[in-house]
Length: 247
Length: 319
Image (cartoon, rainbow over all chains, first blue to last red; front, side, top):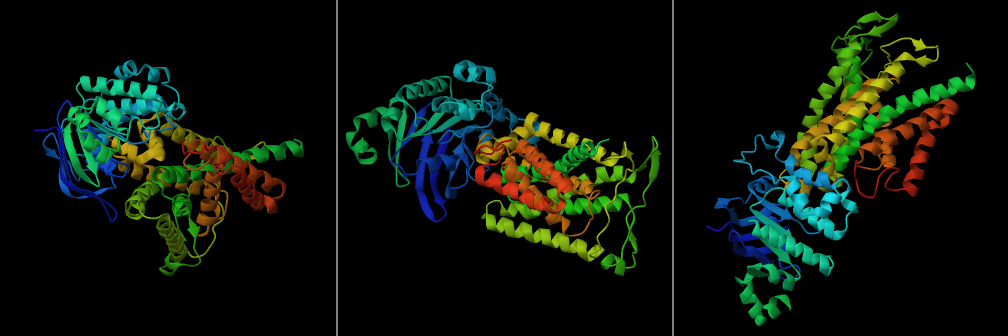
């Protein structure tokens, strides 16, 4: 059984049909990259998995650890262990670094759990562990997140999602707008997270950078998967890269 | 005491009292606007309901018109229970009102969130405006139908003054309001519930992506705002005549001015904005009463022109 199975989903934004029978699977322990041109349906795929609305998933289903999660509320899917670091990081700018990281802990409060039919709730990851992994955040604990640099905000967004102790970490364009050196830092962080046992599904415009750290790659084009193979195979496959990614 | 001194004291006391009412109103409106992006034009109706329920609990009033009168009720409300505490006459019923009014309107707020606001979260703002404005009119007209268009005189449950110039009741009200405002502030700043509310004003989807069912907090936020507005109505009614239009004229409009000055979505802004407006209003009421409303609106226009995000707001919403 794969950790995540996206099975033949059709997703819509209003009237526009964005995902057309898209299927993919992510195996436990992998770093999986979903590549494709702007508007191909990458973000829509991640949002469909996370249960964010829009899009509206009209058919097909998503299974996580063998269980159907399609149609459940975003917050419940998050509690099941799927974390999404959305595009543009979306840290809470007026909250401090510490408060941003504390938000995940709040989701475990009794008052937020009762009546939701959640089974065994995943323990959060201790915040001190995260400060150790991201010392820059440690230094800026009491600073408002909005005052951090782009790279630091990306680290905070990732750390905040790691706090959920997710089984699957989804990253939407983690390198966007970052300087090359910072991209390397983020890469290292993602590798390390993966080595510690978290499965990663990442989407990137910057295909070359993504292929570099991925084990397995999918290419989505006009809402359909048009390529799926190991990262190595994609590196070799000049034609597929040219045709769908323009690199 | 010199006339200048007593004038100054009056302005300070009246400013604090008026500012506290504006702040209580503004906090409720601003947190609902901030977290739910919901513009509640029925906010003033909650003040109105608070004023009337408070009156019914605290003092007996005679009716001259309206459905209740036609049904044979010539008086409404509980009889005042007066007691003398340290030589001051106090209506103990008002204590009951101070507990019951926020509780009842808290419940009303929950119902309102569930049945009026919730269906409109995802609809265009014009829908929210129409439904809440409609609701405000319905509430106002129900009250007019029940009690008639009669205006009831302001009623103060505590008599007496300090040194002959400062009303004891005003001092009491200022104290209670400030405690209430401080408690709300601490709840928003220091508790996990407040953290979710603050995060929600910035990015409610992200809050949900972290596993927090923020829509649950919505009803609590709404009800809290409603209870604060009702409390403002309860105490506001002790300084002004009570009649159906006060919900809009004395509550909704000032509440909007408050959050315009303070910055939308900001609790600190609502407190500060309320106080600024309260002092402006009280100052002019003392010095040139006929100009007080004009200056109030004028100063808000100046703020909006020069700092559209409000005096205390940043470009983004926050506490």
